[in-house]
Length: 317
View 1 (spheres, helix red, strand yellow):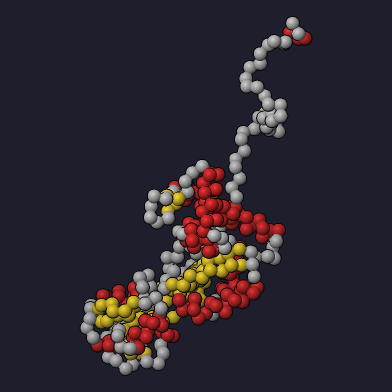
View 2 (cartoon, rainbow, N blue to C red; view 1 turned 90 degrees about the vertical axis):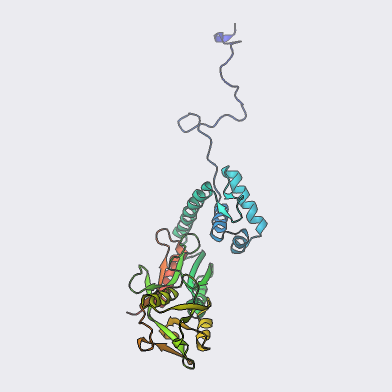
């Protein structure tokens, strides 16, 4: 028998690999397998694809090829071991696991931005999405955003122009929104207050036609909603004859005598006049144009743009 009586005695348990011993915790015990690290670039791609519901648009935002975006999503699925998108549907939709990862991804990206800002407090880097009513997107914002970009050249700004952002898809598509709201209802910054008015042609008696021919903005427009509700409330029959997302085009239809419409009082120009109760059209409400944001979790870049626009545009009450 060998020394200590151990020669020839079989050890219990699996053999140990002398070259790759199991990892030990600080207290000497074996540690569990490490959790794989999620790459922020992959999460950023996932969030972009979900925001646009499109690999093509996400690729454009991220300055990547569509093939590279697809590859990153596949890498993320392989890393997590779950399907992130339901590829059985015609539209691009997240699975339940995908929705969870998108929410965690947004938090991690925001935390990354916060950490970067803590060590580089004077540098603002990243992207921001701003939704704006058409008038502001076309006439007001361009010079202001040019000034902001000159101040923060590392910021990428994406503007979505539309007729209404009252139900803004914050957190998925937008960080900030300039929208029309009924006066006094917003929790954001009031940029200006304006009257909604009925508008007719100075050269045509279109407003005397029954049912009232209407030129309106698309569904979602507050002014369109008020026009229809006002006519219904006062028992005036109406029909929509012209729809345009461009307010200037809509007013051109009114000027030509095709229809009457509802617009900002400040949009009246030559060839147009305000229709009043004397013309058989009831007074309309007052509205605010507001700047609102996504609320808690708003990134540093979006905060910088929000504060800049608030300073430049805030209504002097």
